[in-house]
Length: 302
Image (cartoon, rainbow, N blue to C red; front, side, top):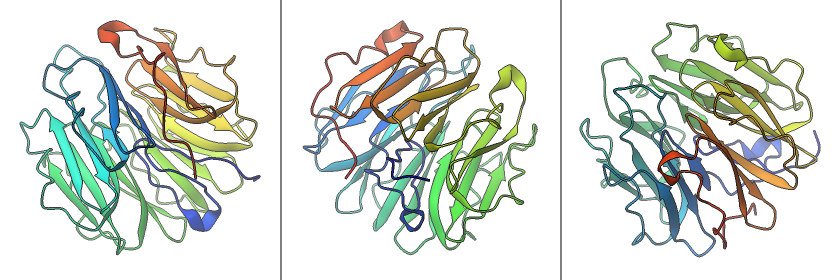
């Protein structure tokens, strides 16, 4: 696999596999979008009903994550998490399950957010979690040697240093059946499916086949992936974008995009960060979640 940029809004990638990343700089949720800028500030747009966009006072932020969730009548509120350069974590938004209670976390290297929960990857390779416990998606206390984390709606996935993968939580569609995966460089989790990027640039997936979100077997030369509720997007080494799955709002209409270094998949929209620091969007424009045309000064890979 040639040199490329890896950026996973809900993933911390493994540098040992040659990944070059400013981790988690772009994130898309059910109804809002967030980006970490090069000056340590954060921009947001979209629904702010629970305060999930109240990030204007954040400083020294090097990565962001948002609690994405599938579109349904009982979903819509979310939370936003920011990783600071000193290893502490900020959070704002919906907190009914204590998913924003991260103020005491220290030595955090990466963050991930799911519906009603937040994970933190510590410098020592262990993982901390806060939020909803019912599905078991916060049962990560025993994880060791972790170099990457990602959250789906109700399941959590960890990438180990040796390229194997762990998963806990809801497994109703087989989205946690990742034990056989090997040589994985990065992972991303959605509503009911999980995707893994191999070190050879190929992509594997498990979980619900609905809408074709797992139809990634033919993809190659991929350097970055992200998973929405029911769609999957990837960046190739040429800076083009691949997409598969639900396209009901046009969230997979990204074939014309060029010079992309990172992607973020929300519930029904997709964002792409270009090498010049601007952002493209496709999909559902409700609530202003795709109003990113004026974004500048955005975090680029290092």
